[in-house]
Amino acid sequence: MHLQSTPAIADGLRKVESTVARLGGSSALPAINEAAERVIHAGGKRLRPALTLATALAFGKRLDRRIITAAACVELIHAGSLVHDDLMDGATQRRGIPTLNADLGRNKALVIGDFMLARAGLAAVTAVSRPVAEVFAATTVELAEGQFLETADLFNRERTQEAALRSITGKTAALFRASCLVAAICARAETEDRRRMAVYGERFGLIFQILDDLLDLAAPAGRVGKPTGHDLAQGVYTLPILRARARDPHLLDGDVNAILAKLNTAEIVEDTLAYCRELADEATAALPALREQDIAATLRGLPHAYLDQVSELTRRTTLRQVG
Ligand code: GRG
Image (tube, protein in one colour):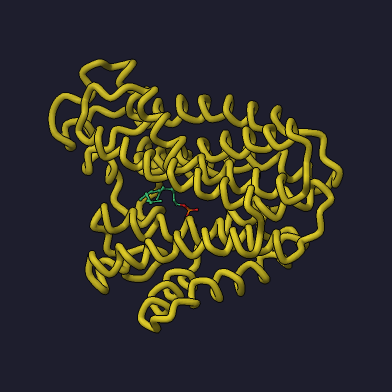
């Protein structure tokens, strides 16, 4: 079962939804509200706020107003960073609708993304707690740094695996880490248990990003809504590619088409999944002893379940290529 459809979490997510909508629609300027609400209502899996709720429940904490607000802040930070990401990418579609940069222009998209990030910070200070607000502020710093590192390394054929890992730790894994950590803080978990939940979230976030990068190379056509090799064409040399370069030092010589022609998709899939399995083992090993067994089991199974889901998707692609 998906985390988001676990009954107690699904119930909490409905409250998170109305809180995100209220926060996103709380500007004094109707035009900002309309744009932010459009991004929020367009969909999204709500995986990060689901992790916040699951962590709180696992520690035996009921889903009170503070937890719901913390989870809403997580989603608002995520959505705001997507607005910025689309702006930087020049993307025209997100969650099945036109991006704000395509619809309203770059400058308005920029400040609406700013509004969403800042509004989450304000809600955390006023309606959750100072320690949680500090986590969100530090996470936003990491998001910006992670994205900066990616930008600084565009088309850098010497990019190291360590540099790619550092970038995705900031741009993606930090928010997954925060999603778990803020719930542990709200649940007044012991310091060591907070640290363990943070490690779990970070490892899961790394898996999520690395598999997203893999799907860019090996998804069935149309699966991720962008052409295969989109990252490569944009000059983003992701971890699956850099690991393939370790096996073929001349892989990145030539243009995108030459690189794509040289890629051994089946090998990249196998190698990346094996790498992510190790991260999934680390994630589950990091989990602390949790009070609510059912939800703890769901959290324990989640990284490997996600891996299996992506493995199945990529299997269809490689079979299609072979057949
Ligand atoms: C925070 C100041 C500040 C700037 C933002 C642009 C940027 C810096 C960071 C980008 C971070 C980013 C967009 C990472 C990508 C993470 C990722 C895989 C997003 C897709 O997540 P899903 O699949 O999306 O969970 P949905 O739509 O389902 O919510």
